[in-house]
Length: 385
Ligand code: ATP
Ligand code: MG
Image (cartoon, rainbow, N blue to C red; front, side, top):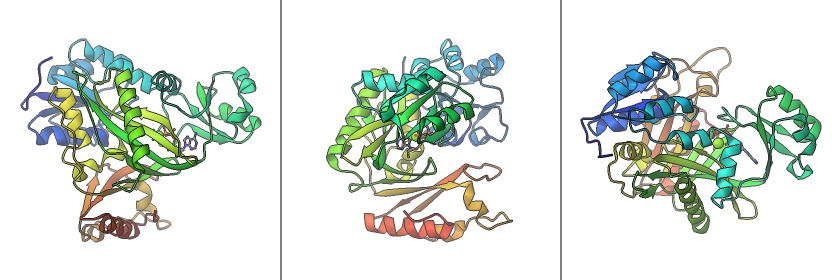
């Protein structure tokens, strides 16, 4: 494929915040954009040149999207693999349907990690009562996770005993699951890699992530956030995973750092990731520009981080801190702090647990960034970290 230069139209499946930031990056570089999403108020649909309002498997909608767009990507991993395959009949699609299908299924994902020589948490596939009876005692206490369609800690249950495991599997509708051993986590981190059609790869620095209630709360990216040897190991593993998929596009891999100093892989997302949002202001090439470049077949250059960065997720909970009434978070207070970059995704209503936006803090030193991020957190009602 020859590269698509600015002036061309790039398409994205899905109209959420990741699609919106992709659209912003593409438009900044002079591309036109097309979004397919059924919701007329979708964050990306609202800012795109073209918005095809259709279901993801709607033949006419898919035809309209490939009519507008000269190449197509996705912003969510649960896009039906069939839709990606359909689009690929007419247009270059990245990532490919096969990589997306593997990332959609925790069992296949773990098998891929193992093939690439990257260690994951001990686990067993749970698809029947017999699997529950057979699962090793060493997997308990553990976390039961649906193989498909989980996100932000949804579709998961922590189980201490086999009886709890049985009950949890019932609660999850006896759907295909994996039981993972609960690991003693010292920290969590992730790596964003971009791989072009020619196999060239670049990556963002390792990101240290703090989750609360199964949802990403804070990402920090600076020289002290993770030991150099572990950072190197995470980057090497991420590159091997992308290489093994013959991946084209932006891929994020999440890791657990264990108390014994070892690193195990958790999961991957075949798209930019919440933990990479800091790169919009903290690096000279963001994860969304990397997505544009890989899709358009433009050269990849290694991004350079030019400032320590801390990102705070802004969940809908911030709107409901006072019993009985919805309030608007103190945006003006936060914007009065130097080095704060506010992103709100234009979602029409706030709900607890819903990702409404994020705030990235950059500054001249880690101390300054940390102090400002803590002040911003206090101003918004986010627990200190
Ligand atoms: P995402 O929104 O990242 O897709 P998800 O719903 O797919 O999330 P996971 O990444 O599997 O969920 O798990 C969410 C969080 O739960 C992890 O980031 C980690 O904090 C915790 N967790 C998951 N698996 C384990 C484990 N085996 N041991 C300890 N903690 C775990
Ligand atoms: Mg996760």
